[in-house]
Length: 369
Image (cartoon, rainbow, N blue to C red; front, side):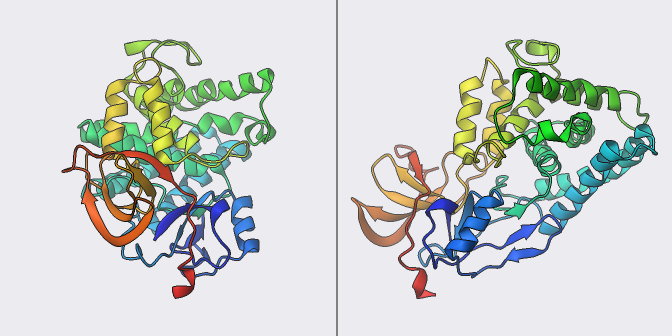
């Protein structure tokens, strides 16, 4: 199957990977014929990229970062806690967070087990879910990215648990921000952005005195918007003044933010998100963290159409762990002519590299199914 921009899918193409809601229910199953009405609906839901059936690539294996069941349960758990912080005035926030911390520690242990057992690079784009609340799914995604970075950087089990807890709760302060500001579809005013920035301080204050939550977790909420050159907020910390966990979360948070659909802009593809990190490496982001991220996360997801430096076009067929920028590519075109598909491993063909990606793909073979 191939990964394609929803806007460029021809009517009649067949869905290659099921789409779920955040309750784990299938909304659109594999093989569904994609009529224009359905495609428009997917775009309304913020689904910018989908997997489409294609005879040349339907044997490709898409590995989920975590199981669908675990993802659903994790988002439910995060959502329940965050909603109580936001809505319930009858229950102490401290009580809610103290109780939730125990639950989240178990969740982190399960996530770590799945990530460490997997031999694949972390590929979040293969998980196509519709979410009612961006912050809940964002909190889980940032946790997965942060843990993948932490594993790559060889953090201790205790450090990974604390980092994971800090990642899950890094945006809990947003529950104290007015909903109309959080979900505003247009550009924020200066005053509204100042309100948004308060979530780092709010999160720190919510977490700092909870007995079951280490103080460093509160600082994760406090520091995930700090930047190496002092341009971040809320305190303008510089360099090593920012804890390693804050530097890791800064990278994970930005990457998920730019590669997720938002009310005010469409999602970037992973390689485009990595360029954002590269452009800020050394000034905004810790280069060691960016490098660990590059090694741990699938920058060119399986199914993505890519163009190589010698002009050949193909589809990413498999990942090489630790070398996200050099996957295995199934060649489909040479000199703009279709060829019998064959594969080339960029790990061993070092003179060839990916120069661009193409998600605008025509599916003239859809009727073969």
